[in-house]
Image (tube, rainbow, N blue to C red; front, side):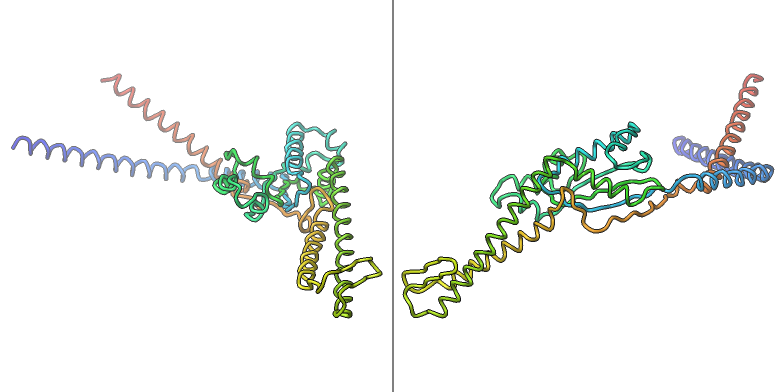
Length: 330
């Protein structure tokens, strides 16, 4: 029986404490309301001041712009381009005006704020890069999602043909900054030599294939006109076909393969006119401002919060001081 009475007393005590806590909160809330009413003109002044300061800073803070550009990297230039981007970012952080002036990227170092580059992940690029039975493809597919913490990032990015180049710019920057940046990326002497050699090889191969196609057409034409003869002589190209009927289906298949090869070579020729070839036009857009950039909203709220929090600290100090005095009297 005494145990039950003890439990009832504990419950009554807890309920009493809860009621007292709620009363204290209600009392504190009304004190806060009274404080706001008494200092409404101070708070209103802080709000107006915060809006004014925020608006002044907004109109005097230049808007950031950025340009996103997809580029195709040719001639195994991925490492070179990525290293160049890292070098430019380093020079930006060092405010190296001389570097930018010498390279002709921009006359004002503040026009470029940051450059980032990342692969455009394409599974077809990986399949074309590696043989179907290559066991490395299993590892690559398992780590296909690239990120800064992935140790395969450096290994994988060279397997992709296309990369996304994002350049953060100041408000005064224009298209010329992006165009000069591309000129600088395409200025490596050794890679340009490789470009010229590759272009020369492709053009030579296309020319040879064109002659082969002409010969095939001539052979088929003569064969059709002299189908009954055992030996065909083509005076134009000095091509002789002996030993019976000509394998016309085989020639047609060869012609189809050569045409497909030339189509692929012409497509490659159109894509390798530079080290870094942009896909599409250079476009520059303004960066959308977040809530923290709205200074005319943030500043009033911050000033009011600081004032109210300071007032609460003063109130807390006075309350604790009063409690300390009462304890000393007792």
